Length: 263
Image 1 (tube, rainbow, N blue to C red):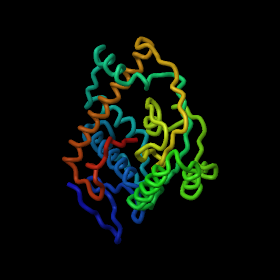
Image 2: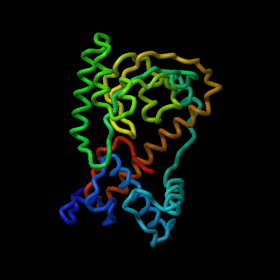
Image 3: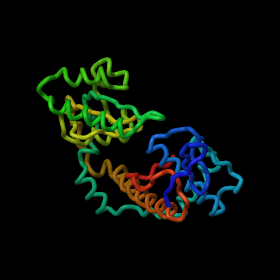
Image 4: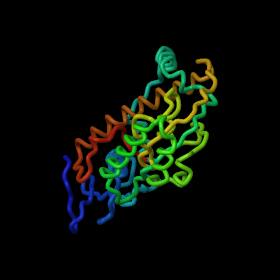
């Protein structure tokens, strides 16, 4: 069940009565879901006898080393992740060949709307969407519009340079940011906000260098790992849904998470 737990006039999110944060502390929705998922798994590890009952939960999102080790053992026990078949690997590679190119680079600028503790995420998203619409309306017409918006609105130091991040490779970016930039052909202002651990980004791709195509045989291991990760995420999401359904989850909506957020 999902409800609000009120202590001293503050909403405190809990899992089976265990607080996920300190009173008066306000967390971004993603951070709150991450802590809830981690706490669900920590308690499941205790129930499975993999973690001592006196393991102390935290309200800062950092679990003990013993809890982290126990969660890893729990997932190994509960989640059966089969090796992908050769056919599955070849099909995935054919559909995502661009993602396995080497040397791909993009020249990018962005406007960052940072998600920080206490920020009104709904209001922040609205501001980001307005900025995205504005720069898209001028895309390719007024070069200074994007740079001016970055100088005025961006929470990134690059805002002083009009949002310019220069030439990037996938290794230069957070994985969730890289997924939106690499393996695509789009040039110009992306028609969607890009989500990362830092916040919401309005992104313009100025140039692309496509990199060098690779033979399937040379990237077969990477393809298989990618498919295993996809299977793991799906299985973990299902397991967390099961745990949440059996728990008293208060003050956090786990149903809105696209993927399980677990440290």
